[in-house]
Image (cartoon, rainbow, N blue to C red; front, side):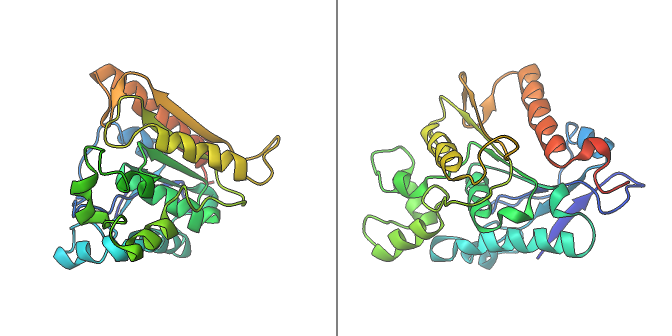
Length: 260
């Protein structure tokens, strides 16, 4: 399983680590430079990209085996990468946080259900966490064209059952979830804000030990933004700062995490 990893020179392991994933539409998550990401690296955090199936990094078959009735491979690949990072001593579950947006937000929701003990925090950006409801409604602008990616549950009972078996919202259950932050936009026409809103409500209802000291499950809604987030250079910097601050806190990077 390909993994791209970058960190500051001199970091001691196990270290606080951010694991990013997407895995859909044959999108290649090639390593690329980010000025904002330097703020994480400067604070001793490792940044890793899991090149899971559903993306196109390893050719057409890599994509084909991460869509339709093989979509769960995307989720199990991401979990396998996280476990590998822990097993090799790069990080620990209490210092490992996950990030994904849109279809990568679906990945985050599935991982939260499948391996909640593996992560110290999960940040889902405009997450596609109620896919079955959306893909069942052909009146929505993207549904019909999306059937090539997810299948058509209106016509195929196997697709319906399979999507229901991995849909994050449909599979929330009573357990101890890690801290979760979902970020959405009121004017998002690709992933309606109601998806993360109902997902967060379900998580709060299901969270075990929901009293004082329980892991936080949060929803932040931008009132003047779309699927790509808020507009304006300075506003986007503020949004990135908010997200990074949450991730650093969840990964315990402020106290050095595992670097001692």
